[in-house]
Amino acid sequence: MIRNHHFEKVPSRYLFQEIRQKALQFQQKHPEAKLIRLGIGDTTEPIGPYIASQMELAAKNLATREGYFGYGPEQGIPELREAISKTVYNSQVSADDIFVSDGAKCDIGRLQFLFGPDAKIALQDPAYPVYLDSSLIYRGGNITFLPCTPENNFVPDITLAKGCDVLFLCMPNNPTGTVFTRTQLEQIVDYARKHHILIVFDTAYSFYVQGDYPKSIYEIDGAKEVAIEVGSFSKIAGFSGVRLGWTVVPEANRLKSDWMRINGTFFNGASILSQKGGIACLSQEGIKEVQAQVAFYLENTKMLAKAVKEHGFETYGGEHSPYLWARLKGLTSWQTFDMLLEQANIVTTPGSGFGPAGEGFIRISGFATRATVEQAIQNITKIDILTNKR
Ligand code: MLT
Image (cartoon, rainbow, N blue to C red; front, side):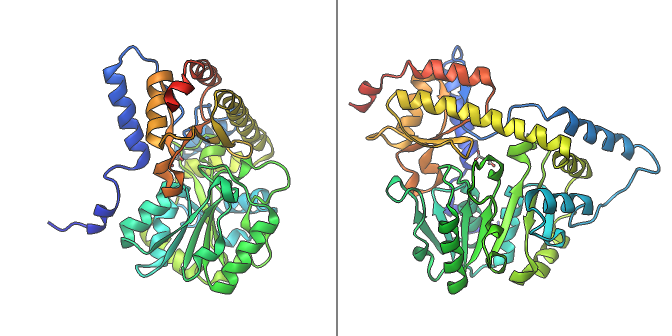
């Protein structure tokens, strides 16, 4: 039977399915253990009441003859695209260049069709596993890793991407939490322009960026010619189950009509209810609810950072992102994962799952209830660091 042989190049399970399976096996062996799940970055806080009320209203309208409609515009409801343009991009990106989707992850997968089978791909390493997995499943190889380690402050050496066609960047980075300064981002854009590299800039966590760091690549002059940007409502408004995101393909990089063709062929637009929720998120009332959620998860991450630092972990990130990137020198990622699971009943994500440069690290997610975080902090005190390092 026909099979895409590129599946031999990827692990049989997606990283977070693998973690779920490990946690399940542990739970079966230790039914008494109360597992603390800080592995997958999945939101826990209820959607804000104003945002939810607008989705409820939208559902009610669909039950009326006047309010009902079927397929929406493929590119997304104009009101939502206008709201993204105004609120996220301060009107610096045209609503016409924004394509609403069912989430950043789905768009990253579909983008592979835009680049085609011969594209040479460069990746920030470590990075969100979907960039690597979707590239491998689609074309089997042609990948260059740009290592990001404490030695280079997790900022990739862009010159390693020379000869590549596409560079995936995520800012703030998932998993390391790194943000680029304006100067660093200018250098990256400048290099991409000179060397004809298309940047895919994933901003799923941009609302977590504090202070004056850039929140979009389009804050950099000339970026529209070389960058596509992907955004998401999942981690800012608790929409990981509702499903809503967007991709900006500016007229200036000449890929817009191809992207339009892909969307018209493979996709019928995001759910109307999600889109009405998205409009509510970006309204005056909704944005307050969004900001409150972001602040809540950042506080969780800050509390966790303090606890793991006090227990001997080297810790990065967390300041501009809901993730901590931590290691106990001398242990592999999976050894640290197992130790935290066995001694503290805490599920994390092994850093090696995010790329070769992630080996030795684990990612700790701040997406949890406050009670879970407090329990995690208590359990961390049970870890015997010295024994583990011996
Ligand atoms: C994560 O990094 O935990 C992701 O958001 C989960 C995913 O999208 O698969």
